[in-house]
Length: 141
Image 1 (cartoon, rainbow, N blue to C red):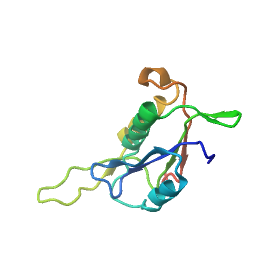
Image 2: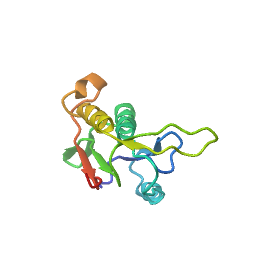
Image 3: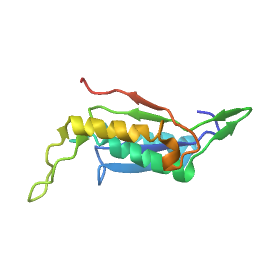
Image 4: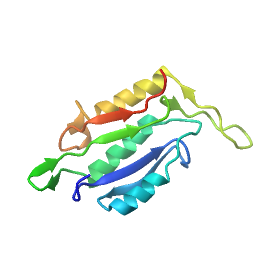
């Protein structure tokens, strides 16, 4: 990460109130970003990847953009680290607790639809240019 480059941290799934949280807004403060990253934990009952991508998109549209690092221009990009397959959150059962999330074709298709907003449909959502999305650690299937 270059000194001028901005990074945000979005968590989806484990430890979030509604499935997706902005853990750290776009910033180039390496210490606070490292602290935010250290709070992330793998696990949980659902992997709402589409919601995570939407939250990242919102942060980039509202606060992102091309950053100049010396003579180079660096465009925003998304690195999605996950420990599972995309799921649809289950319904919360009566009396509290968590319902089991369902990994499904519909959840996978929702992730693909949202990912298209970063590429072919980038102008429709207000991005200044397409943004690459890289996925690391996809589930077994």
